[in-house]
Image (cartoon, rainbow, N blue to C red; front, top):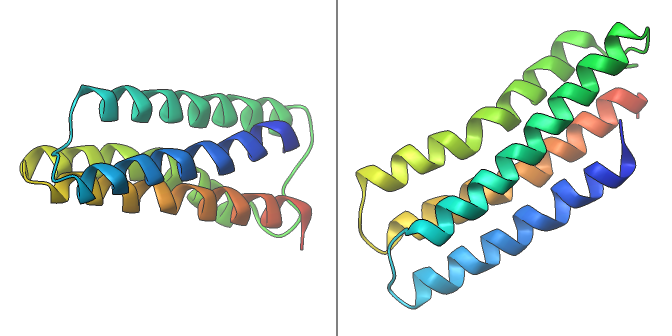
Length: 120
């Protein structure tokens, strides 16, 4: 896996989660700025997907298990859209909290993908 992209996909979601928590404390529901931030994060996760596919077609494989790695990869792609849908369903201040939780899940999934890839 690309260590620079992994670092970005660890720090950026934490920053967006902090922003979402501040908006929750300020009693602000999810808005366009939230959606823009989530779109940028999702774009980064899609870049990670493309890089992983390129590496796997080039002959590199996860050390611990292909199925586990692919499920973490799929999960990382789905967690933000699911959080967005949930946020749209609940238009209260808690929609920002839901997005914060979704953003906090992304670094965990990225870390696990790196562990599975490296065989740690």
